[in-house]
Image (cartoon, rainbow, N blue to C red; front, side, top):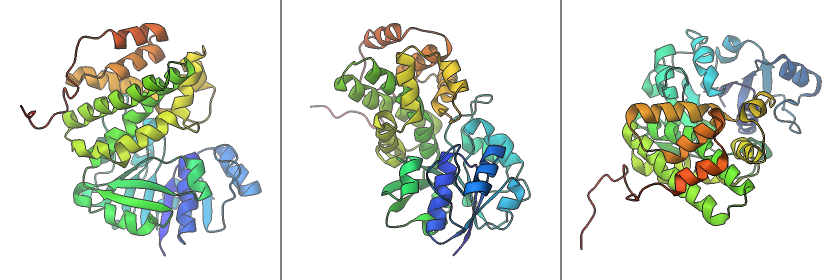
Length: 344
């Protein structure tokens, strides 16, 4: 069995640690929050982020991230995306030269509008593409901790780093698929959170199942346009990191981003809601970064644009809906098509 380090003790990081220990690995989990360290020390439960799940003895929890990764065969980074640069950068020189690094954070860096792969290349250049994988797919932390069946995808250059991730994390109830498209895996994982906010608002406004289906389908088109513009394989978005994660996040009651959309539709102030909740709804921050990146690259992303204006510019929801429904005629595959349409 192997040594696994999980850097970030939120709900998802804790669930990954529980799964890795269930696979028989020795796990070190780094927690930034004093409350988490105290909770685990007293009860072996991460009460602030994943209550109800005791950590087995094979999982040790530490407040020293460099100590956590020092001997690991696999390092999984799971901080909120806005903190990835600082957290990963602080590990320079501490990760073993033969260790594989998996990034399970999802988002776009707000300050640079960079995908997280670019951030990793800048702050941990010693971890080359042959050692770096990105993890995504339709997974709620609570269900992973329960041991319920799920599928994820590990995307890396030429699938080189994906293979050891499969070997270390795959199990009969936690299937790990390999992908050679890390950019596509990143894009899908980041943008689905923004679209889940729109889906939650749609449900809370009782706009119907047709409207929810339209948000998911046209949201997938926006994800694919982003992916194509950034060099991803459009077929990736037919898989776990695309439609799989999008459907789960837009429809599942455990989705923090969908819940944010529901609460905004009920009248909550988005900034106040995010500030008052410990768990992170990544879509709030990603909406702004994705909107600005779309403007920079000339990507047509009308749903993401309206979510940004509702969350950050106080646009009324019904005005956002009218803006979406009153747009000009469109080709369904505009910005997505990679081969010309067949005639006749």
